Amino acid sequence: MTSPSNSKAEVRQKLAGLASDLAGHLQWLSEEGVKQVTLPAGRPVIASAPATAAVAASLDPEQAAARLQAIAATVASCRKCRLHEERTRTVPGAGSLQPDIMFVGEGPGEEEDKQGIPFVGRAGQLLTRLITRMGYTRESVFIGNIVKCRPPKNRKPQPDEMAACLPYLRDQMAVIKPRVIVALGATALEGLVPGSGLISRARGKWLTFASIPLMPTFHPSYLLRNRSAMWDVWHDMEKVLEKLGTAPPARPG
Ligand code: SF4
Image (cartoon, rainbow, N blue to C red; front, side, top):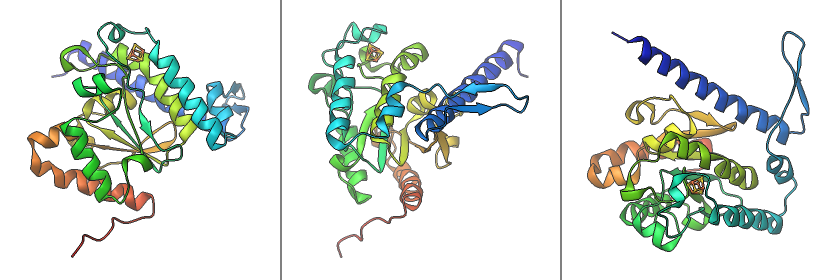
């Protein structure tokens, strides 16, 4: 039986998900140049997206690179949440300025914290193989995380830490405008679309974040422990490729 406190938590989760969707929709409207929308009751609502979203519409590659560097510089000195206390380096994310796909993981691990580069450990190598199998390279996609500082002892980022860090990811998306987001694992999914449930049930089904199609799938570190789940991930990536109107390269005979 659902307890009153559980059902309150579920309502809060659903409201947080709706708020996230609404913020994304307003951001998209703002990017499209819409200054005001009208509710059925006739009351106007201003589309109040971050300034970066509106600016990004007219960025050339040089400006986009400068904007990404500025975000990375802000991240490097960020102390908005407790994760700054034990970090060695921030890991802002890396990749193309105009990617088809943005992969979003959980947070930096030990190697990433040392190098300042996302997904460089064993899970990163597996992700790189997956990206290559899809017909892309690490340089032609963008790879980031839901938090940009390593959680101590690789623990899961807390909801307040993810909420503090999410604006940086939103700003990066507004600059690079990925066509599809792939959320890697339960934590990334929870950070992007709160209340979307277990990753084992949510994976393989399209969601949206900031009006961008989002495909949840398993995290590569889960695949290291459960190799058979690789097929599930591959089926999810086939849906991503289909959405992008492309197909994986043929395997060498
Ligand atoms: Fe700032 Fe994000 Fe690092 Fe927290 S995790 S200190 S919000 S950059």
